[in-house]
Image (cartoon, rainbow, N blue to C red):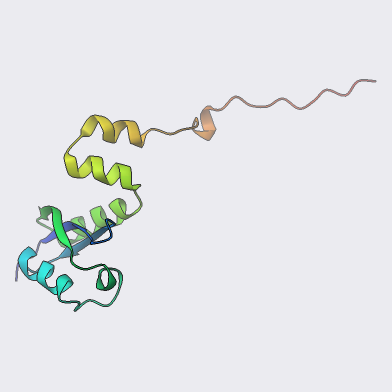
Length: 112
């Protein structure tokens, strides 16, 4: 069995995205999802279609990437899948300044 693993993203029948990892072949994993073998998210959203995959030499790296992607917004995932690095950078920017860069509020001065 290989030491590495695939990170993969599926588009479900309802249009949602599912992110996972596997040491098995992608064809095997896709057919398992479509057969309903996995109880969980994809079971009620079949059929699913593979829309992205990446091989990692170490399974720990694939799992780390999966965890990171699962926290991303749908827009950010779609930009990543398209390989649109400009959009990905824009979506990664904060909408508000980092707390350490916000101007400090001054306490109101008491008037006597």
